[in-house]
Image (cartoon, rainbow, N blue to C red):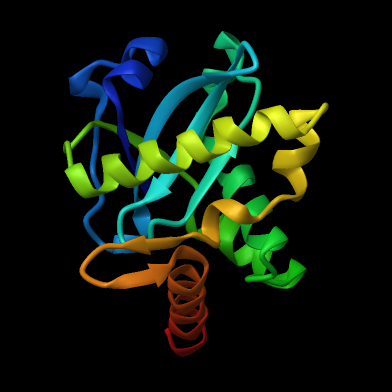
Length: 175
């Protein structure tokens, strides 16, 4: 189960009500921030993991798509993990079974996470000028998770997520 902390902009777009929110504190890998932004006049969802700062973008969102936010999130996460070669096709099914639900929650206003999200969104917006088809860029590019980020010390989101995914699969084998 995933807990998605929604920015005010995303909450407003979803029509989010606080009493609909639930939270899962079982794992840092389960806590994500979500934000709505516009690029090339298309609405996009930006997701960032709290622990690893691993990020991905879901491009060209329409209002009816929000009803499928679980599916959008899980498919986006798996696609990004596959692009970075962090999971195999066999492991994809385990990830899908592990993260079946997305619970919405209001933002926790973590300034480090929000600052890193805004930075990566600006970088993403910069790339729009270099590509005719931005959707193709997002489906093949891995740059969001290869920037040097800082939490307590400097690290790459790709490497941090790789460690968490390996732990997830070890837990499944042992548990």
